Image (cartoon, rainbow, N blue to C red):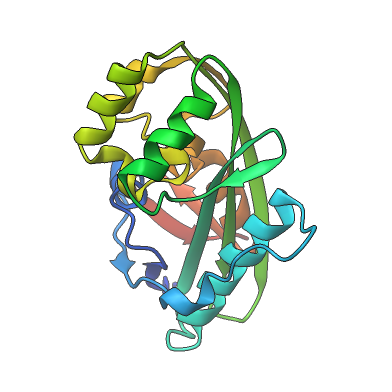
Amino acid sequence: MSEVVPALVLASGSPRRKAILGLLGLEFEVLPAPEHVEAPPESGEPPETFAVRTARAKADAVAEGRRSALVVGADTIVVIGGEILGKPAGPGEAAAMLRRLAGRENVVLTAVAVRGPDGIATSGIESTRVRFRGLSDPEIDAYVATGEPLDKAGAYGIQGYGAALVEGIEGCYFNVMGLPVVRLLSLLEEVGWAYEFPGRIRPLG
């Protein structure tokens, strides 16, 4: 008798993460984690530790109500000069972030946490270097006026208008979007499930 494949649940309302899973042809449910699980960084907490902690908290919170599912949580942050840039509070903060990023390199970290239906959990983190071209104040103001930066870590989205800001990347493109594909598939295997074409999950072994 074949093993029942659990439901795949994305513990995020991010349109970018939904789009990436859609590209893989996977069937999945969207059940965003409660906002209260996204606590701010602790004093002196390294960015990598903060991102992994938050991704795990999201996956754990959703798994509490979906114990028979494969739950995926993720958290993306932008780091420059050792400082974490989260989502801007408004247009003014978005513009300030973009002025800091202009002409410099930043690091995008996405932590992914997976919790299986048997309670087995794992997590990992992906890092991508992103180089911005130089930007004038009018360009920054015009980009902010599109509204695109306001719901994104670091105040930019590489898959939208923000593509015009980026000079180059070193690492995983999907990581910058918010869900590193190869890292996710590796973590799924760690909890006993493998991706196969054309868009299915099967048990390992």
